[in-house]
Image (tube, rainbow, N blue to C red):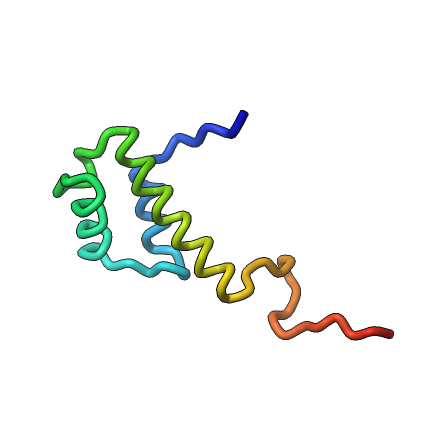
Length: 84
């Protein structure tokens, strides 16, 4: 069984404002309106909040993947494995 996450409005804003996405308030509200038909983030039910958070998390993960974000923490970005 998969892990069940409880997304909050704080989580939504954290994903939107992450360095990878950097969405403005207007961009986040446009995304919410497009995906849920609602104008207010506070009006989202748990399912809608989860849906929008999943979209943002996927976008963030895709950007990290494109930037080579699968590196180990603390390793320099340009480190290459050279044979010794």
